[in-house]
Each structure stands twice: as C-alpha cells, then as structure tokens.
Length: 376
Image (tube, rainbow, N blue to C red):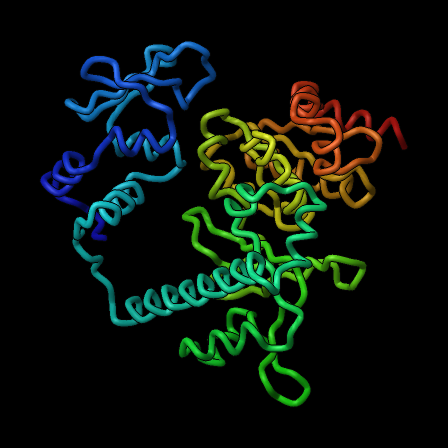
C-alpha cells in the first residue's frame, strides 16, 4: 500500500464496510430502533451504554466516551495502526489498494517473505491435522491431561508432530517447497546420511504468531521426559524470539482495553490464563525478557506485570525483566504465585478469581526488590 491514500479511497472503504458486522464479531449487539446496543468492549460495565449507528457508520460509548468509525474501532480493539486497519478491511471487502513503490530488490524480498510465511502456514495446517487425525492420539491425550478445551486448542492453533522421520518434509516437498526453504525455516534438518528429516518429531506443537497472526515459528514439547523438553525454531528471516511475544496477536485487544499486560514464561501458562478468561497475557518465549520485547509492549500499554515461575530461574529472570521494563518507562509490578507453583498449575487448582486476587496484590518494583534484599 502506498504511503498516502486518497480521501476517496478511504471514504469508499468506510462506506462499504458493515460496521455492525465488524463490531458484532467482538460485541454482542441487540437492535434498538435504528441503532444497536451492547456492553462496551473498552471498559467494564453491566448496563449497555455502547451504541452502534449503521446509518452514520459510527459507534459511541456513553460510559467511557470512546467513539469513532470502523477504522478507529479496529485500531483500538486489535491494537493496530491506521494503515493496517485499512489493509485489513480492504482485504475483507475486496477493495484494491494502490501498490507500494518498491525497488526490484524490495519486491524480491517481499515476495520471499510472503513465500516463507506460506510454507509456515502449510506446516501449521499439517501439525493441526495430525493432532485431530488418527496420528494425533498421543498429542490429544497430552493436551487433555493439561486440561485444555477444544476451543482454546483451536484458538492457539495447537498441533502435533508425528513420531516419524520425515512426514512433514515429504508433505511439503510434494507442495513444491524447496529443500532450501525447509532448511531456512528450520522445519527440516539434514541427517547424518545427508537426507532431509523433520526437525520436530513426536512433540506437541505450539505455533508462534506475529502481531498480525502470521505464523513465524514453532515450539515443540515432548510429552514425557525426553530431552530437550522444548525445541524451538531457529532464527529465520521470519523468526527472532527476542523480538516476539507469544500470544500477543490474541492478547493485544485485551491489553489495550485493560491498559495492562501480564508477562508469563511459558506457552501453557498463557494458554491456561486465556482459557480462564484472563486474556491480557503474553509470554516472553523464554525466561529472559529483551529490550525489543519491552519496546513492543509499550505500543499497547506501559502498565506491566511479571508473573514468572517461583523457582530460582524464574526469580532471576524476573529481576532482569524488571530492570529492562523500568528503563522503557513502564510502571512495573510483580505477581508472586505462592507455594512455588507456576501460573498454569495455580490457575488450574485455584481458578481465575484467586489469580486475579494475586494481580490486585502485585508488588511494586521497590517493594519486590526490598523484599528480595531482606531474604538474602
């Protein structure tokens, strides 16, 4: 898309978009006269004060005062910029946008990125189909033991890599994916004999998405005591774990709505929270929060809470993360899960109400560091 769109294009897209349909995907709306009403998605309320006017193509909340058109709704609700909101609606309603002015090298780079994302999407679909099909019994049993519902498994795109040497590799080669592409994305590796084999085998699979819900990498976990317990994608043209946050694509709307984010360690911690209605939660893809991840969060909120495991590694990672967030100007808090439990275990045993009570009692940065010094 070009850097500047004409007012005619923007206005035409605004008129073409069905604001009731768009907002209705996020809010339960009921017709009231010529308008629609519902509970505001931008603040907590029990009596509907949120009104959508299809005739004027606008919305307004008489409780918190927020309002606007279909573009501003998507920007606020999904945590995206104006250009991305325009692109999203244009794609949905089949409106062609002016192409960017690019050099031949930029065009080649963009096409390569697009191609690699497509290969990752095929891999995600393969792992998902394996999980739901005859080969996925072990994976389904593992997720059932962890208490996951079918709905949350679908939301997070969870999958299973079969206990076979090259099932994904052969599937993608049949789609005319090249060996170079498989190696670049870390989906395949070379065996000692020089043949390509799958990198992930007999593991439950966690796709990793960017902010725009595009698959950029994968994490695979064993279902027993095999080592390494977790195996992640290598750095690729699409994936750098220090610049990504797990589940940000799903959490960004809730983060903006609550003006607060909770940072956890692992995939299952985040999934357990989302399943129980605590959806402003992301994971740092490892225990070490980076400067890039902290900067990414500040696009959505400066109110940050860290909730890492209570073991020694988690405590050390918390201290590092606190300083990084503090240097970014964040208002930092620490959630301490009692009795050495991780967030996943605590949520399953105690429930979301007990966890929200921990959120309300979160330590300030000063209080946490003071208590840690007193424990020495």
